[in-house]
Length: 134
Image 1: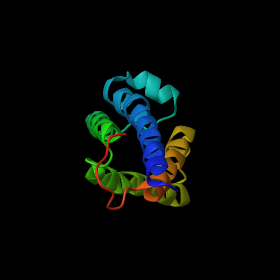
Image 2: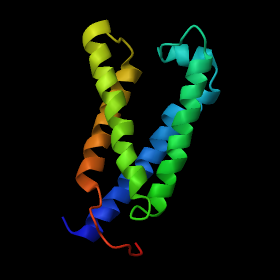
Image 3: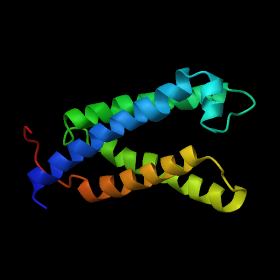
């Protein structure tokens, strides 16, 4: 795939990742009432502070992905860190599904999304390109 086309697709993927990370995972976990999360069958820990911290971390990742979206070549380190950010939750969800029988469809869909983002980041990762305006 041509470098310019690859960067264009990376920007598109990063834009979707920003939306999903902030509006599907980050802000709902940070601000949503626990009754809404229970309705979605999202497991809620006994102490919800951990859920709120997760929401804050997801929102921070979303902001980082926004910077990577604006200039992927300058912020390629964020895209590289995004590989870990997407691989670890995917592996954890697969492991927990196989051992503890995760029953939340929301968690399964999130695992599919993070796995897909991992593959797309891996395929579209810029490798040594010089910085240009997109």
